[in-house]
Image 1 (cartoon, one colour):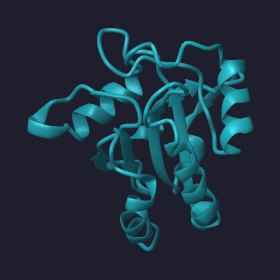
Image 2 (cartoon, rainbow, N blue to C red):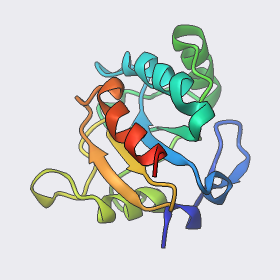
Image 3 (cartoon, one colour):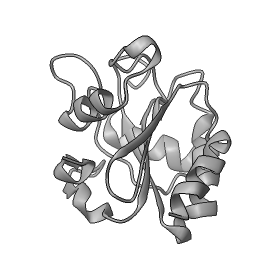
Length: 160
C-alpha cells in the first residue's frame, strides 16, 4: 500500500486520486488559517516555488480539529491562502486527521510514521509528512519544523 491508493476531494469539491502524483515527491501538511503556525504557508509556498519544477508537490489539507483554528468554508480558506500567502500548491477539502473520522490517508500515514514516543495521532496543525517518489512515507515532521528546514531532505529524495 502507498499514498497512491487514496483519493481526496480537492478544495473545489472534485475527487482527486493521489495516483495522479505518482513519481513525485510529496509534502502533505494539515493546515489551518488561524493558528500560530499559519505563517508557515509562506514557507511552504517558497519551498513549492523552488522545487515544483524538479518534481515536488505540496498538498494542503485544512483541518479544524485543533483549537477550532480552521472554521471557514473551503471558499474562505482558498481566499485567505491566495490573498495572504499567494498559495498555489494543491489544496484539498477540510478533513479530520485524527480520531474515528480521520481521512484514510491520514490513518495510513500516521501508521507508517508514528510521532514522538510512537504516538500515531497527529497532535497539531502543520504536521508534515514527506512522501518518496514510490508513494511511501519517508518521514514525519513536527509543526515547529519550518518548511525551509526540510529542503535538504527534499533535495535528497528528489535526487533518488
